[in-house]
Length: 613
Image (cartoon, rainbow, N blue to C red; front, top):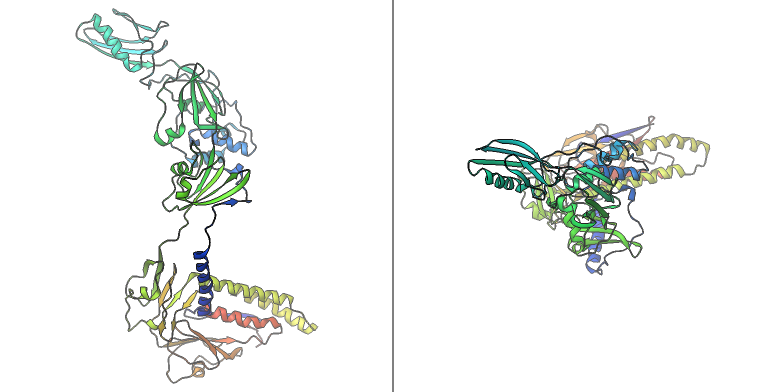
């Protein structure tokens, strides 16, 4: 037994083209009527699908300020234990890249659970680590005992010295005496010392003085941080530097927006890290020794994903409305709608809103918010193939028709067959493919369940079954072209175009293609007075498996007929179909329909043959 695949040398048309068109146009029209008459859809309702897995949440916005907090959270979700007593040194630089999810995810994914690297941050213990001696002091820093001041005097007198502020808050200058500087802002040190020097040296005295080093301070970091405790640093250090030493805000419990600085048990400043991340703002109040940085409890958070620049978890500030979420997440311009899923009255609820509706919509803790583009474009893209003398791609209105666009396409009437225009459409090709696959599935199921009567018949069917399987395997690989017949008897119909349609304008030709169950498939010059049998003879005659009563003829426009004595025209494609009634399985009558669908839908003939015939 053997299976042959005879491929035609030219494109073949849509199987049952007009029938497919009518089949699709009807439901579309009915759907349109329904949309224009239906009542307003209520916004939202109970959603029993539930919420996303909390063990797989996106990183919080701003977490990359404290990479260890993201890694520690990942380890907690995986059941790993972070080593809080590791002794490796922690980095002290402040990362100002707001919300870098990639870095956070990379560190979380690459660290080994339970190792110091897995923690992502190694905390300083109280009093450990190098003392800060940096001179990048805040100009508002208040001088205190232990600070060092560099003094340069030149002119009538020369002094180059480093002065230490004593316990009385004074520095000693030779020939001048003690000068009180404690409590002065660092920016006023030069002015104060210059005034005192000029009291003694009345002229020709130039003074340059600056704070060389500030006394290290110890600050308590507590609240919802990963490693609360006392940490050393410079008075010039920002609250972020001390938070980093404590491994950052606990991204599960802690707030990025409610951080207080306490002095003597009373709040003196409030830190909102979102203001730093988005606007570069931090409190100007310098830290003093004994201050406490208190990270508050995490406020309401929402999860944002979809067509946004910032797909993170966001902590919100009152009032809790969608406008704040949009401002933080920055949706892309194509975004039109928002799907919100959350808990309302202890029941999961889902809402589908326009972006305008979402701006005033109340959001709540743990809401899942997905931004989406969900409006059809006002234009579609259509391309042109074949005998054209101009542009081949067009962007047109969504309601444009074929004849409207054809009026803009230049052609040479001497070479273009303008009466045989057809379309190739994606949706039709998909429908054809599905129809073929469904038919093949029914065929295989019928072969498997067909009853047998005699042992001889059973043996023959056992031989034919592999043939059917091979036929099905090859037929499944056929890809229909999705041709839509729009021309009938030389008249082109004015159909509405769809996105990605391809308009095909065939070339004029005097050839007739003969294929299928003929001895020598080939193209033959059109002979006006010849009938179908003359063309078959020119192609070498019928094969033994030819069905002489079923000859398929397809025009350039895609119009298809099946008869025993069809009329032939220039440009026709003739396919002689095979017989299928020589086989014992009754279900094989379905093969005829499948072969027909494949032949007209893709220009390929998949036929059944036996070696002995």
